[in-house]
Length: 512
Image 1 (cartoon, rainbow, N blue to C red):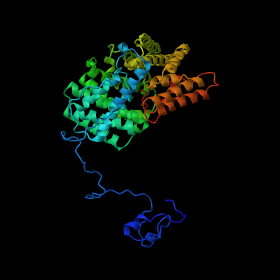
Image 2: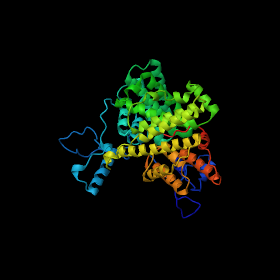
Image 3: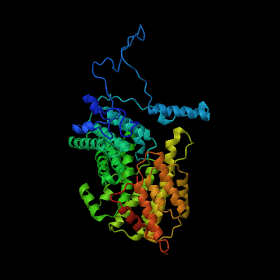
Image 4: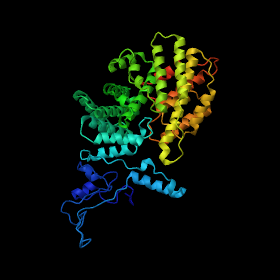
């Protein structure tokens, strides 16, 4: 409080006022309070609320006259503006500014309301409803899968969580809420509570038995949501994303879900698990942590070749389900072949080289879908084309380096690497880490390293993707090793370099 006397307050303290005694207005506290050993409440502003029956300070007064003589007021009706409404407004303003002909306008998919849900959300409290809304509007965009219809996957997940009260449905619901809480607020008690509830529900469903395809698909969806949650936690998860990926693989095998891949409500989840599984096998090809690998293998119950078991259903996936899944199948077969060789399989060097070359030729034959014309409705399809082309380039660069390293072949990869960096420079963002890591390992100039770092910065700023700190640390380590060895005539061994950098991570990194 301001005062003409610097040592006095302009009014008495609240303690003296409550005691109804004269205050000496001393600063910083009242001497009267000190003398009687009372805590001085100071001189600041103190809020007070009217007591019950205090008509003079009542918060709500009586209406002096009715608003309408022929209208009986039953309650207050409010019109709520949601995130969806704001997005539609921006869309309408953009249409007006661009002056696009009404006949050629295609309504964007993000402005289509989801199908109504048959369940009233009576069992969700306000906090859970907020988390569910956050998942539907933002958090779902960070799920790492290669479906062109990510909003469709979101709607399927929400319907799974809310359409019935089965144990597997509750597992999906709590997994959604845990993932949404982590994405919005970081690792805290609320996310842990929902994660624990989801894991408990999964355990109960296994004990009771999974009897239908619907229950199996819900179980698979909950596992993949928990796998994604652990990946978003980074090193805090201690690599537990593998546990849930293993659970997803077991469900796929036990329920033969891979044979029903053309059913949209099943296929998207099978391919989601397949995508994570292939890149997990890449991680463990290079994550050479012998003691911890044995511990993980023992706990997962697949000692003696658990890397291949991690995707036991992949060998069945020989159907044409799109360019990107085909690319990943050839890449996964390449990784499996190298894993077998690393474990001492009785395969000659020529046979190994011929097998790798055959897989390389297969990867080259994959053709990305044509780029659709730019429009809001085609945005997801255009991103999928860009991701497919990036993956193809990165996979071919990786196989080329393996052939140089393992078989002593002389490969001219300059044009392929130039193509990859041209793709990265044209990309506004890149939410998939594997292409950025493989092409980033080829960044031997400051300009190309700036290209990679700028792309990562734009991705973090313009999307809700998880932090790319692990990827950034890995590339920094690769670049430092290359710079330290720059004056030598012989390059560092490619496989050993990747092994050392990936193994330096405290937990198995996920390059999804």
